[in-house]
Length: 503
Image (cartoon, rainbow, N blue to C red; front, side, top):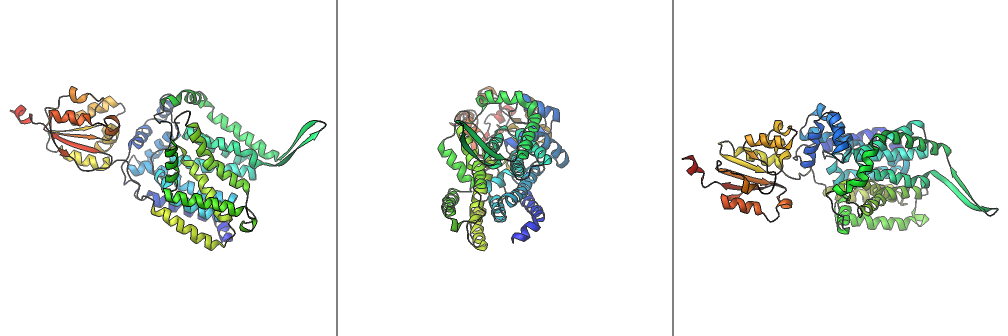
């Protein structure tokens, strides 16, 4: 098995990429877009110069995803599948590079177990289809780790340049993903230095540290190239560090939210507990040499711990000062958990086939928790056709609080209108009203319509007491609630004065 995997590792890499792409691309356009994905479509439709300007002045997110999506959508369109296929490809490539990383720097068994964990992760599958930057982050992070370990093992000029590019891509994909670079800085002395000693010579302390000078030189070169790449964004970065936290909509995370995040990383609370408790047991067993394979490396185990729970806890700690803790922001830390568990499992001194069967059973339970195909946040792709059908005979008004997603499915030409108020005016021509505030029931006159469909998605946030439906019920006759579409509530009213006005 070992010889086969090493001999055909690039064919296996290609097979993993193809399998992941096929599995994720199939039905990737079945779930409707949600708000952030619509924002991605709108942003990607703009000229590249405008995408960069928006990122530099208005949007706290860096511009790389928007620029890549701009060219991608030019080639493959702005449908759900067209948008998400970029993320699908990134996720598939990341799976292949994960296999090579584990094979080259851990061992061949780890490459098998890690590939199974990656494939059965619901979160990696979900965000591997999200029309946002998160799948690209996973790709760039796993590429960065691969090149980081490659430079330490056998440094070359090309690896140093590619390492700088990978980290620059992380920087320009999402600023919070730069925790990965901090983790690499922390790990470097532990992985690169080959040993050392401290001695007292003539009442002076003498340090003798052994490290490959070539490794240090190429890491310094990579750091210099990375600095050149990100230098144009230095002022924006400083501004966001000082002021960005004030604009964050998140709240300081609770420990309950932290635990829930870890549970979801492992597909459920029960599977999390199985993985964690068994990992602790493995560590205890590996402390006894007769249960441990001879090639076990505490350094690689340290690498996995730092890039996994280490970065996750660091982000959680930093969120105490500025609200930045969110599952999708730290999804890359799950890679470390994959390294930890797969490596510990592979290092147990038991026959491989026994370990493979046990791991396959565990992976089967994880796979059973995977939601396939991808679930939607809300089902505007189903609700809008229903609402449009109510307008066939005229005299029907639709009121909706999510202008972008609604217009994407109602009329793509209206969706492409850049300004909110212009889009509002165009939708109004089609008997669709998108409110600007919460006082519109008293300010607007809809007496020229016989039927009114009040549809809302954010109503739970902006109107938790449902005051607006109560106000509408005072002016119009409530007929009932519409069909049950996920994330959308529809209330149907009729105008009792409509016929009188017609006369």
